[in-house]
Length: 343
Ligand code: KG4
Ligand code: ZN
Image 1 (cartoon, rainbow, N blue to C red):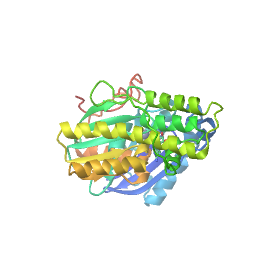
Image 2: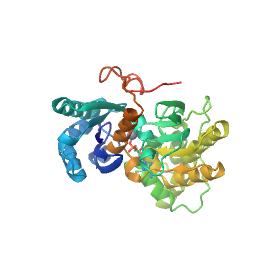
Image 3: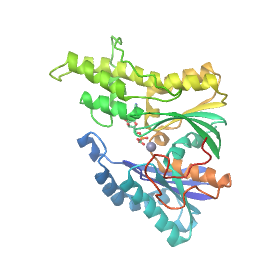
């Protein structure tokens, strides 16, 4: 089976091919122009997807050495994400599938992230505890099988990646903020700054807005003219990263303590964070579980994870994808795309 996976939910245009279970192409085009604005501008994002989608799909097929006629399935992110950006990928993929008579599989973006780990060898064993941390999402999931999972907790305000981006912006470190914060934190020497993070009601939920405010207050108090020496930036970046990662670790540990899992995995852009990987690895060792870390190219938004999720849906015989129309509702992040058995 050859699956073409397309992803355009935010600021990455991606096209990938999975042939007989192997990724043979995974091309990702990251839109750079948002850096000027310190965040993603939806209108610019949609327009850039329009420019890139067709050439990217063509190049991915060439790289995978397959022709469109040989593709069996066309899978695409149906949501959640930026509506204008989603529409570009969705209509492109659906049009392609309709015109060629191919099977069309809409995929939930979060379920796509869950499947990053399943692109690795060995993949996570069920039941798997999976942390999805990106610029738009922070979720802890109990993934029981290919057709059943439970959302244990989520953020009640900002996503983890969003907090990295906002704190980086406070210090003029550029966008995206995650890699900049990590890099700056590596030069910390004192390592004695601590920023409090809220312990949210609801056992596994997260909150990041208070942490961002406490960094803001610290900066306002100590650097009223907004000029922060580089060394001080590093100390702040280190303190912030410890708290941000610490909160993810605390809830992951709680879930491991209270549940029964056979593996631990992580996905999403923040999964690229070295400190988070290090601490999750320690946790997995403590609980004697295999820790499945996706390759960097599968952490950020990518078409391979979308194709992988489509493969699992097909293999587990799920014919009903949960959505009857492309975008029934964008009211909640989970209302607009296929979800299997929520509990
Ligand atoms: O998954 P992703 O590419 O896009 C979304 O779906 O949001 O995640 C992007 C997020 C950004 O917030 C970025 O700052 C964060 O992932 N990120 C990191 C690192 N690399 C990317 N956060 C912390 N440490 C990193 N090394
Ligand atoms: Zn994502």
